[in-house]
Length: 219
Image 1 (cartoon, rainbow, N blue to C red):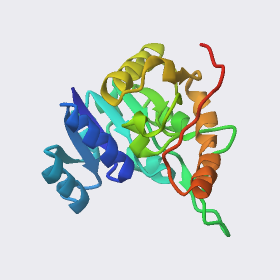
Image 2: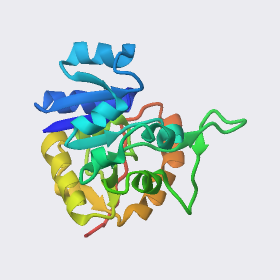
Image 3: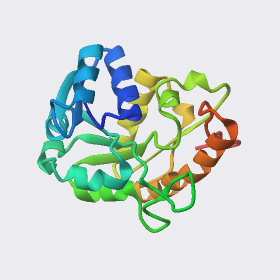
Image 4: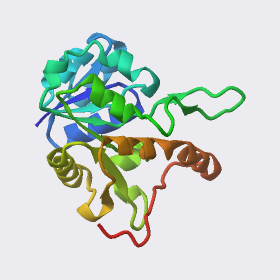
């Protein structure tokens, strides 16, 4: 499968690297196809380098791993028609600095979410919010955390969510019983709101190899 990765940070690199390892054709997109970070990644991994718009066109499936606070601004450079009908997995959290705190806050609250905004910006895309509630290394290797633990997915298209769940199981090792469908794209409000608590736990634990376990949950 051809996969487009929007974003060159830790999350983008982790997802892109795993997808290359699993035999997919991957293009990582940055503001410029010649940016140092994306060029270095392509040379190191055997993947392809491109601008954001190129990566969006290239991918049959697209991961949005953008800086959440500026994601909508970045998505403006993408032709919405280039992702029409495609699954776009929004992995980002809309984090913004919080005055007087070492930890960031969220740009959106209980009545909005980045996931919803991405769907509105790309109305023809099949947006699924996923993988935004855990560390990027655990995203691609759930075995880093012992025992049962869960992922949450949200989106308006049931078939897209089924496809994403299957991809996460085949390629990243997330078995079906670990993936909880929490509803339509408005449910991204709830999953994004987990991030402030996640960051507190990360600060207290001193490491990021942990995840959520929903005890007693039965779909």
